[in-house]
Structures are given as structure tokens and as C-alpha cells.
Length: 228
Ligand code: DX5
Ligand code: ZN
Image (tube, rainbow, N blue to C red):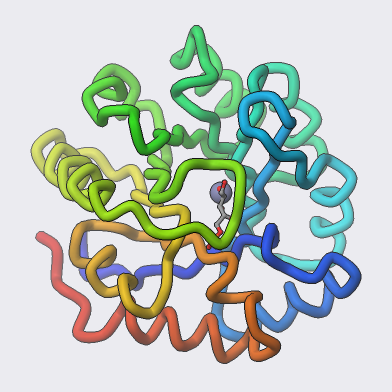
């Protein structure tokens, strides 16, 4: 892979929902092209968050790529409605899918880019058979369910392993880190092999949303390495 720019994907979980449209525009002004939408069902994770109507409204409001991270126990039941609502990327959890290859195929058949996510306790080798099928692998760098948690440093090794496997097998899936991303670890995550850094609190945690996206992007891309 060439020296691609590492993208910041703002996670609206940390946004002020009463000002969602304005804050999304501010994130876009900072150069963000992906918008990360955390969908939680209160069952796969102990929290409830955003659903299909929000995706529908955002689709009409922004040209950003709507990237839906489904933290739900039965993703198959929701893939079609999220695609119809305007999601262009759909990421499901390995831990939630009994027939992962079929679920990823369903996402692709419905015209969205399929992604697979790994909880911190789930090893990379469990994805071996599906890596050729996915557009992205999301590495959880916190336990899913809540924003504002501390980055789990051991996840860095998983990102490096995925980057190595990608090169060895000549694959081109994107690697996303999700959770606890800050200006302090953005560069290390980029060096480990990430293409997209999901950031909630560090984008929407203060009023300068545009400046926060720029600051994270500057850190991630500072003398970006050229990957062969
Ligand atoms: C956690 C979510 C993350 C979260 C990131 O379950 O998947 O996307 O919003 O939030 P921060 O950046 O605050 O850790
Ligand atoms: Zn997420």
C-alpha cells in the first residue's frame, strides 16, 4: 500500500445530539470524510445508542461516508434497513456472527462495504478465512459499549499483526482503531498500520470540533511512513 493519508473518523456517540447536524458539519470542515456511527442494542453491549432514523437524517444532511459499527447481537436483522437508510460501510462483530462469511456476503450483496470488528479479547487469527472478503477490519482499542474509555495498549500488537498479514497476502482491507484515540497515540496507531482512526471524545469533547479533527489528523500524518 502507498503512503496513504490516515483518516480521522469522528464517532458521533460523543456528539451533542441536540446539535448533531452542526457538529457533523464542523467535523467535515476539519477534513473528515468518514462518519462513524455506533449502533448499540443493549444486549451485545450494555448500552443503547443510535438507530436507523438517525442514519436516514444524516444521509440527507452530509456527503460523508456513513460507516455503521453494529454492536448488536443479531446483525443480520439490521443490515438491510441500515443499507436502505444510507449506510455505505457496515461493520459487524466477529463475536456476534455465527455465520460470519454469510453475514459479510449479505452486506456486500446489498451494496455496502463489509467490515468486521474484533473485541479486545478476540484474537486476529479468527479472521483468517474472511480477510479476503472485507473492506475493513475494526480493532476495538477499548471494550465496546461506551465512549471516553482508556485506550488498551495491547491492541497495538493486533494492528501490527493485521498489517503484516495484509502485506503477506497482498490484501487491501483498511484497518481501523476504535476507542481511546487521542493526539497522544494517533501517530503510533498510524505507524502500526491503521488507515482510519475512530475518535469520539477527542473530537466532540470540546467545542472546537473542527480544530480537534485537524489536530488528530496532523498527529496521525506527521511524517507519515511510506508503506511498501
Ligand atoms: C465504543 C465505540 C467507539 C466510541 C469511541 O463502543 O465503538 O466508537 O464511540 O469513543 P472514544 O473516542 O470516546 O473512545
Ligand atoms: Zn465504534
